Length: 568
Image (spheres, rainbow, N blue to C red):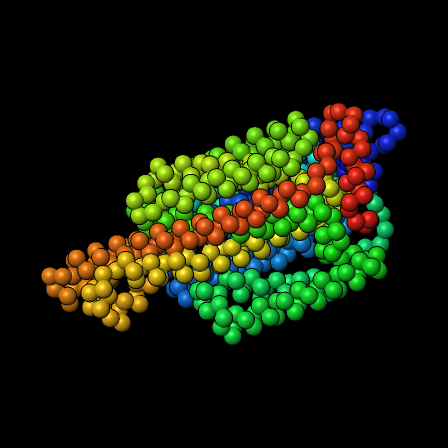
């Protein structure tokens, strides 16, 4: 198919001459738009499904490849590489066009998937998962940027429900499919399943997707040093938060050293990028992005909300299994209410954005609903039921879908010249926030669990166990039937008292876990409240592509608040 040119120039947001704004014209034909979006949605499904399909198979993988000591690295390697390359892909897509960068990411992702499935050792799997992550880093941010290229900001809201549905389906389908493939075939197929969908998506994009390249021209220079500094600074930062509280203590020399190196290198990166921008060159992340108040507030809210939300919802299955007593298989579906209502919230907010052309109060409403969902989690203790948990999940999911998907649209509307860079930067900060949130909330859980566990345990039982008491300082034991069998054997020397002592310890662990998760909920709620306050400082400019004539002044206000950069 011949490459098409957009009918509107991103550098000229409105004609300003009394005619019909270019933003109200269709940028591409309906056929090309729908075909491109079909490929984009398949790629989004790949990216989101891969995040949920692997987890159920990890225990089997570690057993088959005899690599329990490197168990966490299967996920960590993927997370590291997929996070650090996001800003690079966003910038390169602004410079070279979305299509080649997007296809490069898909190809690398599929090669990594195939090689991961062929892995014969744990080290091979870790290396190939890292390669898969390098490709995955291009998929989601560029997919969102492509939506920004195909549609005006107001039109993008209509697609929120569809893109939100992709996340909802993958979150529900992923764990079930991962478990079924592992049991029915083998764990290798959780990686092979990416290939047919990815190949079809790739063919659609190759032959039917327009280039979506900016119309600006000029010399292109790649910021190699900036890219190296960004990667070198981000890797120790993520490793520090990933290992802190689990592999090493927070104040250990290893963690402090990682954070020190990260701070120094990130400071050098910021200094160097600012220097490049003053010289009118092309930094990976333009520091002047943060001079735009809309981007700055959106990045802060996205990072904080990512910390709170992902830190909170990742401990809900732990609470369900360890405290409520839900089975392992049933806990895989405990997040279903949240995912379903997040799709509903995404559809509703998208329709409201498209009809009203406004976003600030929709974002505030979404955050407030999420806060309410968090408040519903607070009363849950050792006597909690699955019904109470499900009600809180319904409200939480509605708020998450209502507000979370808006921020990419908001920054794209404010920075139309820098859609790729701004979208990928926002995704980058969300990933960093989520990683920090998971690590920090894990430490918060431990701080709440340990004193509550020891206080709930009868003093006579604690004295009888002596040094063995430290064995129960890990609440994850509540989730492992094998570990519980070993615990029961530990109590056999106590004779007739073994059963009652075991039950006392298990009940104390349940109490401790309930208190620990409750502490996580409190900290997450506090962070959500900060994000809610920050949203009141979000500047609102009407979305381009609106129907009313009053909207024509909006782009000028947007440009007055954004850095004057030319993207080539």
